[in-house]
Length: 451
Image (tube, rainbow, N blue to C red; front, side, top):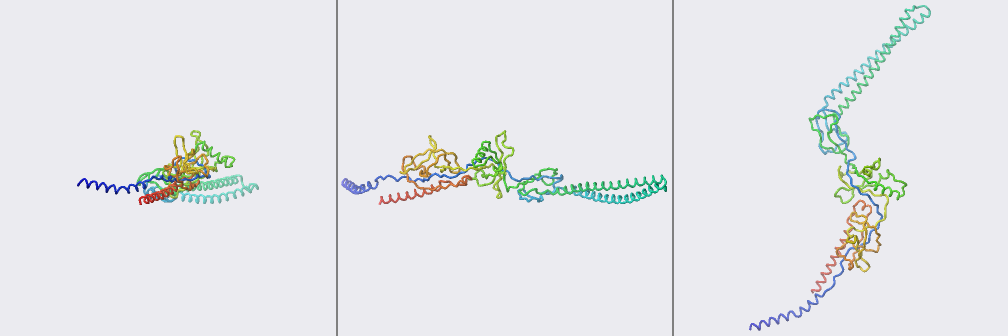
């Protein structure tokens, strides 16, 4: 009885599996997958200005030390560290008592000198009157002597009196000159005393941000003592050097532009771009401001150069290590491809191209320079050659792919400043969209097969 039930169960199972097995075989029929989608584009051929890139350091255009111009005890400080200061603002007060006393003494000397001048001028007036009277008496005695109406002794006495009166007049006049000279000396001393009193109030020499104080209240300062430093960061220098070879390259570039010879003034007027460490691109634009008039330093073979940049937003700090780019004057036509599309193997650098049959091919290239996501090639690629710029891991030489057209946009000026976005971003987005659509299509096909 038990064996009969077992045979019945086996028969039921076979009856159930027989038609289902046939259907499953048809559903699992193999179909080759479609070619993988990859982003393709043509190379970008554009006018491009080569540039020189150098490392340098920043320096404020305007900075000034605040120093004591008189000695004395520092009585008060009138600012806080890192405060923005306006030129002429009072910063410190140095004990003024001594200098105010010297000022009063100098003022008294000036007044005494003025009084001495008045006395000397009055003496000149008396001496002039005496000299005039003595001259008249001498002239009268001289006339009488000629008529034998006066004795020789009377004439000699009149002459001696006249000579003495004239000498007294000259002496009185010299006293006036001396008194006026004394007045000038006293006025000079008063001027120095006035300055010393002014210098007891230490004022800001420039606009800018002030450092912490170097001398505390109650300490004695001497003439020339450093009290603080003010830095104006509204403009910033970038100092760097270029080699003699690089300078010659610029000179050849100028001659290629049509200039008869290298012009140092025009060289200094070139644009310059700057970026800090960690910056994505050269966001700061300025001008070359100075090149060493002495020329190449024979010891180092370099030319000292300086560029100036606006810094109103104070994003540049003194002493930063920065990178400076200087475009040449002569533009050239160049071929660019996205940097990530350039592959490398034992045979060298190459691109993956898609031919008319959508088959991937290998194309050897030489990269001159890599910059901000772009590679500049020595070769010129034709507009018909389609480069794989995205989905490179899905492209294999000799195998078919599904090309997704992508338009690459290259701004040569932005490239010089290093401000372009990744040129493959758009390709990746389009490829992701294409793959998503393909995946949905495959899912729909699988669902239909199951049904």
